[in-house]
Image 1: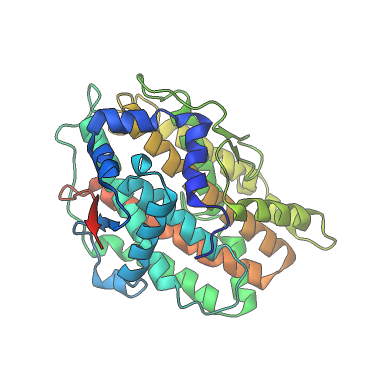
Image 2: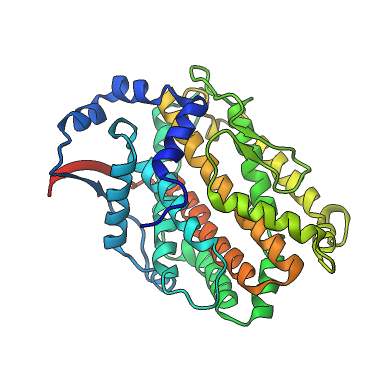
Length: 378
């Protein structure tokens, strides 16, 4: 399976960027993965044990389970990631999205038979990421945080808005060129946390906040992990290794901005004022920062330990890169009217939907369980 950059390099790059306490914390705080690592032999295979998760009939209209693909990705992850770094949430909510967006951010023509299974992978990534964070809030409460934590079981109706949004994106992807380009442009704006610019701004502000003002008391934040300016469109840079697609779409967006006849400036400006993309991004940044302030005890990470904080950072930073690359693809494609580029943006935007939508549902699922890893003989 071809990957632009090995995922082992992704994770080790994250550790080198300042989260290097992970290995020590992982072993000393649990001992579990240390024991697994000791037991690993050439005839053993890492297996992901998925607990029950919501997969209602409406989700099945846009997604399809592919356990063979999932198991193959687990095997790749086991080969590329040192045993003491292996974690089911690192796999599902960091490794899997990187794999998915490596596929979807490539220029494309209509029809892609892989989309239902990729959407399912992103559903797993989002849902179990939310379940993990819910569990972390319960394990590391702060004074005033809700106890018991409010929750409710998932329902099919709760996924209806998500399925509707995915279907709209898939229709644009499989439709004519003009429709794909129009969808790519419209996806830059949209309802709160649904437009790519707003979503990038929110997640950038959130990451900035948890690296600085909301950093856990007893954890070390990596230096220079993420750098951005809130009024510069999709400009984030990272101390961890970036997905290759991000640099490609940065360059294409830069070229689109200067190409004769480009609509780049028109799209960025919109109708002006609050409709300008930098203004939308800035509002998203402010919302992300405000939502994750330590005073919001429902989302406070003040007491997270180093291991939990590291995992929150690495899953967050790579999903932010995926959103950023998708936004740049949408901007470049619509600026120069390139339909193949537009379809890369459209299907990648579709992948962000189950991550965010299912994440929110996992965060409130009071009957949820966490996935686990086990080693077994082949």
